[in-house]
Length: 361
Image (cartoon, rainbow, N blue to C red):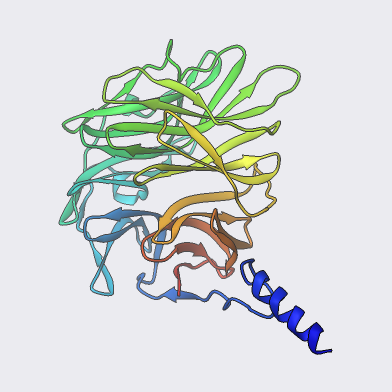
């Protein structure tokens, strides 16, 4: 009996090198609601800013755009100066920061067909102003949608899509001072073809490089989707396509975040997947096994002090995974956005329809 106890102790000591070995258990993660968002504010997007987390969205009664900055354990509202009619009621949907400069675009539905009417904004955390554009910059018969604002040192860029003879092309808009211009994608790596329909899902920058993540749908009998990225090394350079390595049959890239390198979050054959790289080269990373529906899942990529993380929302609950962590169950509700820092922060719409920030304690 004594020999058995000694053998059991030796085996237990060896197995402590493995997760959840023997009787050792990790403390359950605790999510804390951060009660700093004002009542009547529907948050839409999170971004890291020079003074802390930036939160964009819209006040609901009356409808007006709102931009908040974390400060001294609370939030401070950034003064906004709308110019257009739709700018006065827009929700800020994407925010990007370069140094002290803050850029955003917003949207509100209107007109005979209830299409999104876009507005573009810039300034600093001391104040942000809308810059009204002529209708045809973002609107018209071939108009698509806007996906992400990107702020590179050379100036801001918006990534979205635009109608073409093949369906939709991935499309970029650039700004000179406060005037935005759509860049024609025809003949470039961003254009869909008779063989492939391209789509963008996210964009970010790494230094001067802008990276778009999305997929290429093969227009043959297979109708397979392949995860891909598109890269522009500097302002005005040609775009090039870099496919994501995978041994699976169907894949798509759904989200992208960059720090000293970039993480692409997506789905391969019905399971969450991730790739790390610099835009020119990507490597697949090992993640905990998590099955998702690529058509309905919401994925967000972000960096915390402990490493890269992916938040996965299925509409009812959020799960956080990473290459060096177990599955972490998050708060109930619909995942809206996520951000990093010292710990993970999730923006979730709870079952009562209220959007709250949650922080991993």
